[in-house]
Image (cartoon, rainbow, N blue to C red; front, side):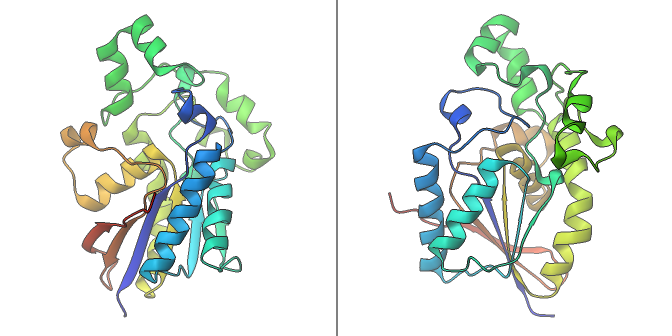
Amino acid sequence: MAPATLILLRHGESQWNRENRFTGWTDVPLTDRGRQEADRAGDALRAAGLMPDRVFTSVMTRCVHTVWRVLDRIDRSWTPVEKNWRLNERHYGALQGLNKDAAARLMGAETVRLWRKSFSGIPPADTEAPAQLRRDPRYRRVALADLPATESLEMTLRRVMPYWHHVVVPQLRCGSTVLIVAHGNTLRALTAFLDGMPHDSVAQLHIPTGVPAVYQMDAAAQVVSRDALNIKK
């Protein structure tokens, strides 16, 4: 089989990114800056000659709109796009909507840091979240037991892995160029998996908005090399 290319892209800046709030599964729009970041990411892909054969993204508006803008910039609006809840952002439980600095002052900076950055730290649950999500048409066919009340990064990775193995990997094994547009923590989890990072190193991993990371993959969908594209400001 031919080698493949995997492109990971975090959506452009969202309104709650700008406000420094825990976003999670709350559906918030891109800011003007976020839209510009998506456009520049598309320009970088075009300049590098990277034209995705398939795109996978979450069901969150900030990701979907990023995909639209990227594909428009590379003149590939016809590219097949598949949206799936398994690529959603990590669910932050009862922290969703809170300002991160205010949460640190209220609950303790070190506690909140562990919830945010560590591999296994689990924020306080929002026990009503699964039932509320089930009323959203995006999740109507998702089993209630699969809808989170909170997630650690480890739980997020477990949620992403079935989709990675059963949907994304077959495309890579066919030699496709695959673009995944997802979220900061979804991509932190996937990057840690791809790069074989020790769990205690994940706290230092940051995924910036709007900067494509490009992996060259072998015929077995194993990483050969990784690079980040230069973004023109």
